[in-house]
Image (cartoon, rainbow, N blue to C red; front, side, top):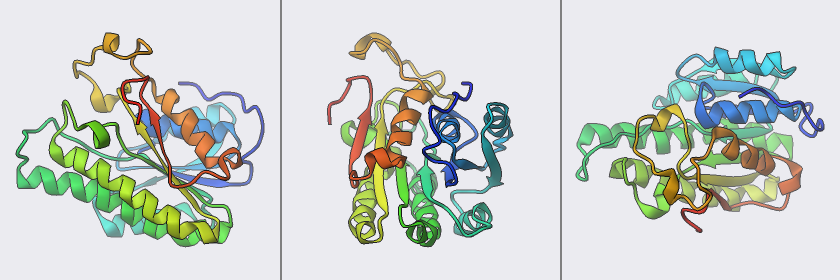
Length: 247
């Protein structure tokens, strides 16, 4: 998806850290924030060079850090590297994993998914929090899932449990971040056409809007939540699912 020509520089001079930026929703979000003038730090365990190249080709500014969300040390180092000038204004936590596992998940899958999706997101938020507070207008958006509400049709219980727990994390930090001007929200995507769900038998005909979502369908609401247009919005979960679930 090519970067869009910025309609305004509403995020100019600000730094956004986007995890999971190598593909899917994270990559689309990096492009959407860059289109609004932010310097976007693309973070992923894989190379985000393709996202960064697309971002720069469209006139955006950005950089890249590599990290392993399941390692607290790796997360802390990546966040410190992402803020060399001591600045992070926005954090978008889009990175995560999931398996098409059995109802009674094995210990290895449970630990890996919980450690990555829940503990890793908390570690990222904890490391970025001092920078977000210092900005005076920090914004965090966590990508959860429709599965947190409906359960998973394809992914195992560890995935849906981790995504449900992220909602509690968002609300806790929203409550305590408010006095410091830090807003914390979430988006809960439905069936989005990304490499993460490639090959799964989604039925577009069962979606009221009649199609699978695209990464940009989620990235644009994330960009809204990051902006001052949502300056009085915190602790909310925005459902982006084409009408499959109304929240």
